[in-house]
Length: 265
Length: 226
Ligand SMILES: Nc1ncnc2c1ncn2[C@@H]1O[C@H](COP(=O)(O)OP(=O)(O)OP(=O)(O)O)[C@@H](O)[C@H]1O
Ligand SMILES: [Mg+2]
Image 1: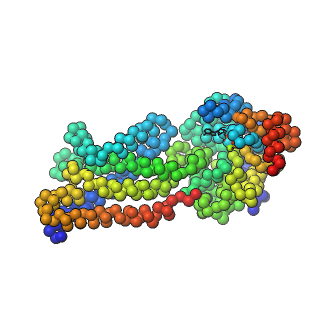
Image 2: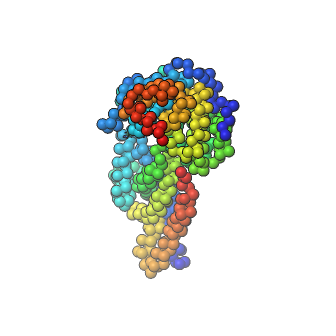
Image 3: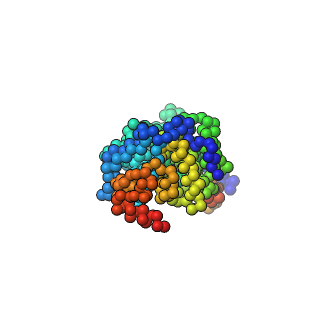
């Protein structure tokens, strides 16, 4: 379905194909409350260029909040988050620009319902990056072809299957030529037979060297694609390790408990 | 019937009603959208200003607003909306004051209709817009408002119909629209009154029924499929 011989991401991103060790996303001492609930507790996390980090953890442990804080969809009270050395501005146009450097893929796809697939993918490049319509459409068609939905370019999101919509959502993010991509349970809303078509696209991106933070319950994907697994519980990062090490030798009781529940069914 | 139309200038009264409706609709759509943007803004002061606007103008009787425009704006504060020296100063000035009143009043309903439209939009739409780097105004213009208008077709249409009928209120400051003529007929030719009522009703039906038919046929088609 997806064409594996052609790269999904831009040449610039290919240049950093292997994890270089150079930090791209850096969180230091990040704290966040929802009222009395301490959702992020002193989070320190560094993601290197080209690294693929899978975030695991029980429901309510703060995985979504972590992603959303990195993209500043959520504010935080203390600590700092930098992208490629630049701190995220508070609000306004500067934040909007920086936010475009980090793609976000949502569980619910969130394609713009009143726009065609093609318009969904070209909106950001035209409005934010100042591309011409022709340029943006050419690139959009390329991306849609890579994720295998170019036939649907002139349809509306509601006319597509969930798996197709999510692949369009990935193409929409890629069209911004982001430095990194965040995925918040991208396959959780999908029928089982559509999960793999989305995971395939993500796996391909990972291979091409995209920096990725992926919240998922797909352990197969974590084993195959992740450089590192992070285990969160109650707003803290409890463990981080390469996938094989984490799955075979979890150190904390919480992680053992979590893996026991997930892997037995 | 002939006496009715020859003695009273019903056609220009009808034309006046149409002008009040059309200009009033366009004006209140624009102003109402601006107020809705205030109410959606992330800035607290702007939100408060929008809320205050709606609270004041939605809860004040239109008659009062029309009088206020005439008495306060013009006769007390001396604000004129037409050239003082022109011969038709009173006609033009009253017409414009009437429009101000109609627009200011109905904008509050447009704003609330739009907000109900915004409530039909999942939060994820605005988040996706922000996440691809659109600014607040860009995401309003490109993502939120277009969907809000489609989701608000029915309440917006209802506001338009109400506006059409509410134009009759401005006869109180001497704008010669249909209700103004009806009052004159009552005064000078009360024998024609029954006929006049029927004709007036017909003319309003001609204006409002097509809007209703449009709403019934298109509100589903315009709605955003999710
Ligand atoms: N907007 C909000 N207001 C108040 N509480 C919130 C809000 N969003 C999340 N929470 C709470 O914060 C905690 C962490 O939420 P978060 O969505 O980050 O968890 P998660 O790890 O992504 O869980 P899941 O696996 O269910 O998606 C939860 O207890 C949740 O109820
Ligand atoms: Mg979550």
